[in-house]
Image (cartoon, rainbow, N blue to C red; front, side):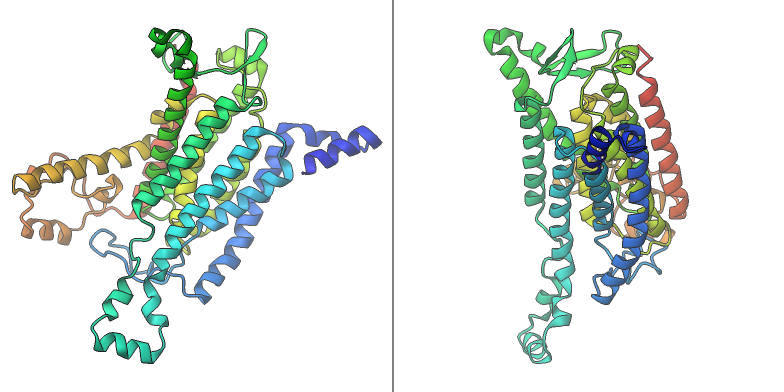
Length: 440
């Protein structure tokens, strides 16, 4: 919005200083600063609002969270702070006619609403406490009080969450396929491209359409169809990985900010003809607006850490975690760097894989009448805060701890230490991902 106002003032009246708002650096820094201010100011108001309305945590699992004493009564749905603090600076400093900016705003809003619905349904578990006393007595007489207390305790059904993520991924893929504004500069002209950056390889790009050479004239269409499927998978996978990573104070917000910094650098390189040529990557005109959005996003996440570091004053909930991961996936697809996700989002990947391995291994044991575990607890960050009481409890349940393949990943670490070490891992992997541009 301000971009167009200042451009008009510069072109029509030559107002001193108005021209600087055309630079990506100026608008990105302004978006970062404003998002920090909004997230800290709005965050304080939102926390007080949630406490007044009793939208708070009412129970924690002491077995997996030995430092849970300060977390009962902490508000949730903190993702609202992140989303508001990202959208407002993006609207003010971004170019709203840019297809990529519009995609990012829609993706963040869509997944934020999906997560908000899930968090809202979970908050409805306290419906019993809000019933009139006469209805409470009736429910107790008929033995239904527990039903009221447990209603919707798991929030939105997983199938509905996956469907919402699927629809976004499908939409992103189709927009990148069909929109005339989503193009790549190759060979001196703007073209639609199914190429993606391939790490560690001298010939730096992989063409999805190349897998379908046997289809003849249908090759390009098949390549785009496959591209859409990849976009759908990426959005769903990264969104759920982020959701699993949101288990410790400051964990998801800190990791995501570092990941976004890496993608911000890649987006800037991709949008700049000189840098794109230097790194031998695709030149994607218009993708510089992603830098403005990412700057606002990083500022919102850092501002959220003001309240979310241990001991947390608010939790982001699915409102934040689903939106963060899915949005990162959309950014990767826009700049055609989705194959770098396993490196940059290594922590999200590790969390997801640990859960999948644990689930499949446990099911295999159930079929044989055994209680098998791959890890002490999953997502994997929970394995680093195993208490002696939990280990003893697992033994009493018939789980042989000595037979767990990764039973060495355990210990009653303070969650601050776990969180910071995960941040360090993300920083190393994000730096390595940038370095792969020169490792060929």
